[in-house]
Amino acid sequence: MIATGTDTTTMTSTASTPSSGSSGPASASSGPALEEMLRLARRLRMPYLRAHAPEVLATARAQRWDPAEALRVLLAEEIAGRDEATIRARRKKAGFPAGKTFGVWNETASSIPQAT
Image (cartoon, rainbow, N blue to C red):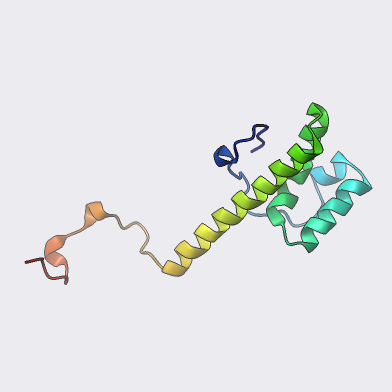
């Protein structure tokens, strides 16, 4: 999601998986400068920045954003993507049972002793 405001708390990443290269919109947006930026982002291991760069840079160019604003939006997308990936990884590692909620808790079937 592209946001032009200065509040980064409302920004969320719309990509669930990072793009794997410079095909698609990247090749249509700009020439060697964009390709070099995508290569550097890949080298720095910034997959979410790479995924959003063509769209954000096209919008920045069309709306004449300040370069610092475009960079801020790209970095905010990278942070949001990393945060989402961290949450997914931690949930997977925790091994929580799928579909279980406190609403289906059966206290009589529990092996946990009741409080005295």
